[in-house]
Structure formats: structure tokens, C-alpha cells
Amino acid sequence: MTDSKSPKVSDDKPGVPGFPSWAAVYVFVVAVFALNVAFLSILPLIAR
Amino acid sequence: MRPLDYLVLVASMLGIAAYGVWRSRNRATLEGYLSGQKDVGWGTIGLSVMATQASAVTFLSTPGQGFESGMGFVQNYFGLPFALIIVAAVFLPLYRRSGVYTAYEYLGKRFDGKTRLLGASLFLLQRGFASGITIYAPAIVLSTVMGWDLDLTILGTGILAIIYTAVGGNDAVNITQKYQMAVIFVGMVTAFVILFLKLPAEVSAGDAFALAAGFDKLNAVVYSLDINQRYTIWSGIFGGIFLSLSYFGTDQSQVQRYLSGTSVRESRLGLMFNAVMKIPMQFFILLLGVMLFVFYQFAPAPVFFDHSTWERHVNAEGGASLRTYEAAYAEKMDAKRSAIRSWLDARSQNDQAATERTLNDIRAAHAEAQNVRAEAKAALLQRDPAVKTKDSDYVFITFILEQLPVGLVGLLIAVIFAAALSSLSAEMSALGTTTSIDIYHHVINPKSSDQQSLRVSKFATAGWGVVGILFALFANVVENLVEAINILGSLFYGTILGMFLVAFFLRRVQGHAVFWGAVIAQAGVLVCYSNLSIGYLWYNLIGCGGCVLLSAIIQSFMRPSDPSQSASAAS
Image (cartoon, rainbow over all chains, first blue to last red; front, side, top):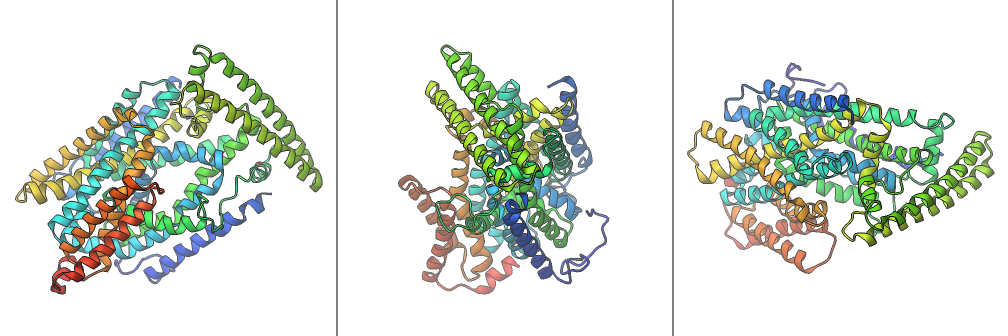
């Protein structure tokens, strides 16, 4: 978690290690969503 | 509640409010008051956006939803990550570049003054009433179960929010929301841990999950294409994108949260934090409800969870007959418990056939117990047709009051108040800002100084708080209040989103076209509402689609305008 003391990074770049662009961040978010749905889909099977 | 619980509750709520006021004490300029110091990092924005959306109802009703219907409700949030990506990529940079305080100010820059006023007025109308339910919904549940005076509970919640929001402005909202979310996280995790610890020693976490799965409570994703199914992955994604886009993209209570970021980057990361965390958070709250269901398979469960209402009717004239349902339910639950013990034995011996057989026994016993519960509710309804028989909102609060140790009860009640205050303060701040910027400064006194606008902002914030309190105090005159507010929101959200979609994506459409397109679409929605009986969520789509379509059609009949005009205004 950052605060006002976090280093200044250009708005054009996400400034998150491993993410060269915002498009990469958005793809990551969609990938997390897909993983969530996959986990939720198999949850009843795992639980039994 | 014991004195220690009251101490935890009052100290945490007053302490956070006082700290928020103290930290934001030097906001003497209009910009400082409305936008804060613009020094907010992504973590604070992320929590603030999350806290604004999660109201007290989230923490009272959602576990009840999990208890009653399982995990399916989580699909309602499947469109949210996609909507937040669109807001972060399209809406946010345009708002930031325009240097606006409110979303509706952007409509003024892109179109004209009357379109801005229309958007602001629709928001004030809808959100102004909704703030009443934000206070009323937890107050009615808490006053019922705790025996508190309803009016005093409403006044206490409303006045505390008014004081710190009106005094400290946007920064006070951001700061308090961060700590309110901390209380919420700590409280919910604590409740979850205690819930597991209170399960019988012979029931492992694996058994608890397997039992929940045996009752189909863990079926979270439904791939059915049947449109009559309430929650499916498809309605969740497509309907959810639309609703979340309206809420996060055009509702000032959210726009104000992420516009207070120190840069576009911080705001975007705050939004992406929510895009990633929201589904797991809702999953966790629903899972708490599912585990409450498992817990009450072993612990004595009331036949009706709204204990106060039940006892009132039992103790009234002729109400003693209701006790027969309590006895019948206890008997059925004992039978079910015995079947569950057999199932646990079969499971521990890894006997597949016996496990299946005993699971069927459990299901049969469960159906019988549910029948008794339904009969008890029907009997209650027969005695009093106005009684609310949906008791799932009372499941979690019953667990809190009956099962948690002294001190933690206060913490969990603080969770509910923290959620109510965090949503209410963001709503009041947004209503005050919109009134000051889009109504007072734009229409009433365009030559007002910053100091005048600042004063108006503070009074407007407090004024909307008073409106919310008054609405909550008189809310019981409206039958089914929550639904009434949801209907009201759906009637206006679509048109507002339509205006913004035209602003962002139909560059050739000008102010007159979108204004009249929105007015006709809104009138059409109201006419449809009074003549049709379709589900109210569809009005979002009708309003939005109607506004976009009509704006484009009206523009095509108007003289072509200078495209550079709109481009320069919006850039």
C-alpha cells in the first residue's frame, strides 16, 4: 500500500514491477477474474 | 451487550471520527475541502472505493444470503472487474484532464449547462433518498434485536456522520473510511475464526465444507442460459458490467473517491485493487453465511431468526400456539443432527456408499425441518399480514449476540456501524459537492468566491445529512423500503449512464441532442414503469439505450456543428 510518500511515477506507466503498460495490468485483472471463476466452479467438487 | 461492548463500539466509532476531523482540520480552501490535498495513494483510494460500496446491509444481509441460498449471489459481482477496467481506462483520464470536481461538471464542459444541471439533478434526487436507506436499514435491524430506540439509533448514526463529513470534507471521508475498513476486516475475520472454533470438535474444516457442498450451498457458478434463473454467470457478467459502469463511472459518491488521488496512476491502481479484491471479498462474506448454516446444523437454531418479532407474537394474545412450531422444529433438527452424525462416521471410515446414503437422509431431514420453518412463517403471517417473514438479515446478528464473547460483540456491532458511516459520509460528501458546484456555483451564484462556495458546500453536506435522517425517521411509511430505493435508482441510473456514454463515445452529438434525448428517455422510462410490470433492473437498460439512441437520432436531424467545439471543451 502506498501513500503520499510513494515515488513519483508517470501516469502513462503503471509503475508496478512486471507490468510494462496499463494494458498488461488490465489483462492481469481479467486473468485473476478467470481464475476466480474457475476456482468457484470447482469449489463444490473440491469440498466433497 | 455488556459495558465493555459499548465501550469498544463507542470508542472505535467516535475515535475514528475525531481522528478524521483532526487530520483534515486545515482544509480552508474549496479545493482542499472538496478534493482533499490530492495526496491520496492507491491503497487509500482502493479502500475508500470499497468502503463506499459496502454498506451496513452488505454485512447484515450478505451472510444471511449465504445461509439461505448459498454462494450463487457472488455472480452478481462478475461484471465489476470489467466495468472498473473501462472506468480506469476511459472515464478517469477524461475526468482528470478536465479538472472537474464532479462528474456532472464534465457534462457541462462536454455539452452545455442545462445537460450538466439535468445530470446533477437526477443524481441528487436518487442519491438523496438513497442516503435515508443507508441510515435506516441497519438502524431497523439493530434497534429490533438490541431493543434500542429506532429514532435514537437513526439520529446517533446520522449526526455523527454529519459532524465529521461537514467539518472535514473529502479528506475526512477518505481518512475515516480507511480505519472503518480496518475495523470491518478485523471484525469479519474474527467472526469467521470464532465460527470455526465453535464447530464441534469432531467436525473438521474439511467436514464443514463437505457438509455445505452436500446441501448445494457451495454452488457458486451457474452456467445455465435460462433467463428465469436469478443468478447466472451470464446475467452476472453482462448485467453486472452495466450496473457497475453506472455506479462507478457516473455516481459522484464513487467518482469523488477516485478523483482525490494524487495522480491518474494512483486512482487507476485504487480501482484495480477493487477489480481484483471485490469478488474474493464477497466470496468471503457469503462463505461466512454458508459456514453459519453449517454451524446451526449442530447448535440450537431458532425456528425464526428475528427473535424479537417472534417473541412479541408468542407473548401476544393467542400466540402461545406458535410454541408448537418451536418444539416441532427442534425435533426435526435433532433428527437431522443424528443423520449428520451418521454421515460423519461414514465419512471418517471412507465408506462411499454409506456416505451417499446418509447424505440423502440428511437432505430428507432438512426438507422436513424447512417445512416446519415455512409453516411457522405462514402462521406468523396469518397473525400479522404486515410482518416481514424473510429473517435471513437476522442470522448473522443472532450469531454475534449469542455466540461471541464480551468485547467482540461490541467490535462486530462496530463493523455494522463502520460500514453504515463509511457509505453515508461518502454519499453526503458527494451530495454536498454536487449541490455546491453544479447547482449553487453553476446556477444560483456563478460569481461566488471560493470562500462562499466552501461555506455552501459545508451547509449542503450537513443539509443532505439532515434530509437522510428525516427520510430514515419517516421511512416506515413506505412499504418495502429497500425495494423502493432500488426501483428509484434503476429509474434514473440508466439515463445518467446514457448521457456519459454519449459524452465519451459519440463525439459528434452536441448538448441540445443529448439533453432532449435524456429528457425523452427519462420520460419513457417513467411511462414504462407506470404501465409495464417488467423487472425493474431492465429500466437501467431502457434508460441508457433510449438516451444514447435518441441523442444520436436527434443530432442527425440537427445542423452539423463544429466538431472542434466539443473536442476542445472535453479535452
